[in-house]
Image 1 (cartoon, helix red, strand yellow):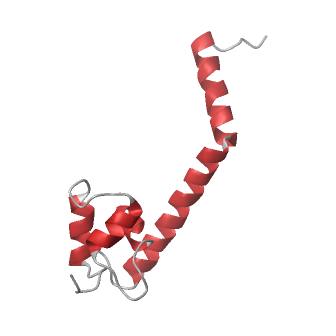
Image 2: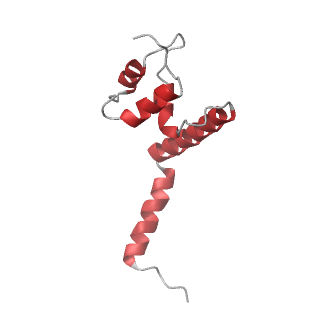
Image 3: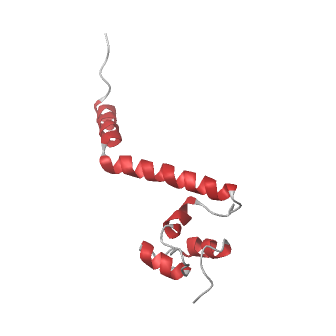
Length: 99
């Protein structure tokens, strides 16, 4: 005879099942997969210092070039709030040299 899981475990299983069907979770998972592929492609092209955290800035750089500060502003982050990401983007030359 099969035993029911303890109540706490059943609640966790229910939450996990619902979470897998939740649209926000599905989009988040898809976004992470895309970011991982972008970073892998950049690594293959020699940008080995880039991490997935840089994709936020990458998607906000103008084709003609942007300062890291302008890209961070468009992304809704501040240079002070995410200094390591912005500094990493500078080291990888992911910005134009204009002020």
